Length: 162
Image 1 (spheres, rainbow, N blue to C red):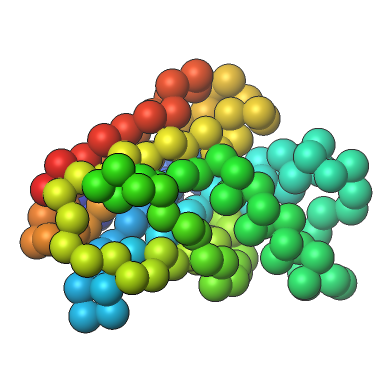
Image 2 (cartoon, rainbow, N blue to C red; image 1 turned 135 degrees about the horizontal axis):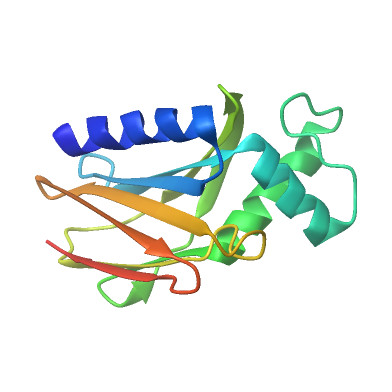
């Protein structure tokens, strides 16, 4: 709990100053549903600029005139820059949607049919193609344990053992 509170305080402080480029990925194992729930928080302006470079199109995540097109952009980008490997098998991120909140975009994914596991490997290169100062924080709650770590450009890989 203290780790999660620290991360939220840090994200709040960064949003005030914002010369830093940070994303936050929360991963929660839901044993009742046998699924891994993934939430990704990225500053709206950074994410929109990154997506504009990817698609050479109009990107409006906060108040989209074409929500399905924006959902496709968000889902595609995150799926290409965030991979979750569970006990050696790559999980399929199923997009559940996104929302704008306090200058950030929250994107939601689920990996279904996940039994008890011992190891999660993360490849997180979110916004590495936008700024070399990018830091991606990852918090995982699984099997009764909370773990956090971060990756910084150019290194995208993390591993957590439970």
